[in-house]
Length: 320
Image (cartoon, rainbow, N blue to C red; front, side, top):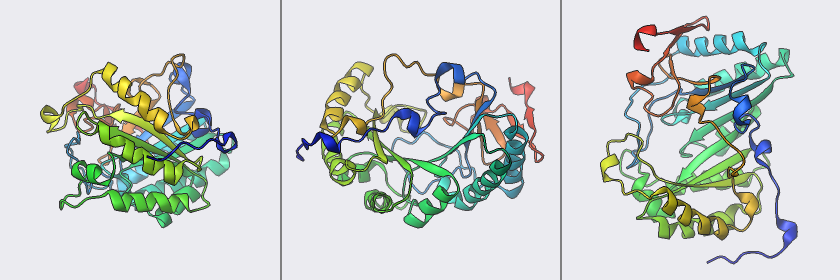
């Protein structure tokens, strides 16, 4: 086990508001029509076949006409906004890297005419395709936040986060994270460390790896999360923690980190609204439909309408 360093000068301070002022805007910001939070799914597919994945949608890549619609929608809204958050989601969004680059470049250019807007761009990815060149290109275009999930040390991770051909994925993801660490790029990387009743006791080994590799780098933060049932085909096989037991496990995980500042947490006095309940937040899917949640994104009950090529939102009242 890696020992905890004692030098207080090595503790980094990096607040949540620095990480993402839009994500942590609190309840009032959730109803502010001058804030817009977009989740864009440029590709509904993924190279992984994670054992607890909840996505059953096989949407392909976003077609050019939908890309144009996204650009037009953003252009229509920009002059009316104070803040814009664009979060790329999937599947694995990096399977459609050209789409992300195209839209991010458009946003970057458009912001030149409205420089007062606060803008944040982020990617939630399995990390397999987040190589150094890709990260550098995204960061140059203002996409500076990355969320990457790990399920434990290599042998544990490779049992649940496997490629479609059955091969493991940990080493490639870890090499990409180390390349990010060794760069002089400005970014925020959130490592989401998942665990189940079967794997929780092994998570300390992964925390040791995280401590050794990233504790001295304030660009990297950590969230601990138990696996949940979110509608996947293997939900019935998942053994779950109760909320109380999950908290009891997370407490020593947090203590096992070198520094408290490595953590991202929500304090008890910081009420939050789930993004899907925010009237100024919604999802644009690869097929041009939009919804409120990235979970069950292709469920008809989660489809609100579609976006037209000139950037207008058309509500499907028959499905409401």
